[in-house]
Image (cartoon, rainbow, N blue to C red; front, side, top):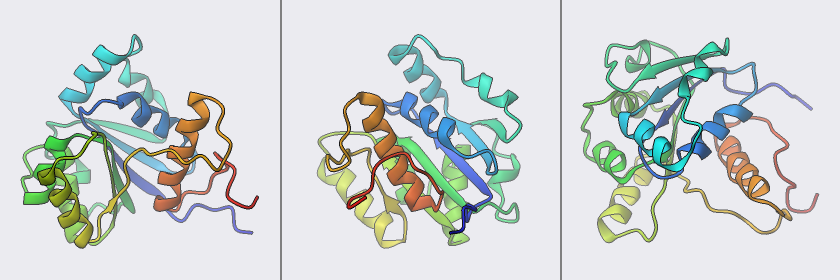
Length: 192
């Protein structure tokens, strides 16, 4: 069995929705052979300060396979289609970011990367963090889905015998890894 990941370069956008810590845990589990380009929104930093005592994003920049960008750095390499990346995930994705992506507003690095990845027909996963969804949000998700974007909110499954919050988070992260073609053993699969 091939243990190589099919992606080599991944862009991760973290917007200001609740659950920024889940986005950071997602990064923690990414294998070291994948280059990570992390884009942080100002709202993500603010949300993390409200939801966690550990709000230091910048310890990730010391990791050799992670490059960190501010959401205001519109000239960053990841903003260009000529910069080869394999996939993009926005985790978590705020409803504001989702709406901008839906109508093509590219006024931040996260939304610019989205626009570029869409035109280049690369793999995009969006993890919207809201509940319940209103009709406008559902219409936005439906439109993006029709364009080939995968909509994957953080929803747990009960079949892999999660016992703790960490188990539940690993299940969700593992499902996102599956969508991005990243090999993992974060949860027990059905029938295993």
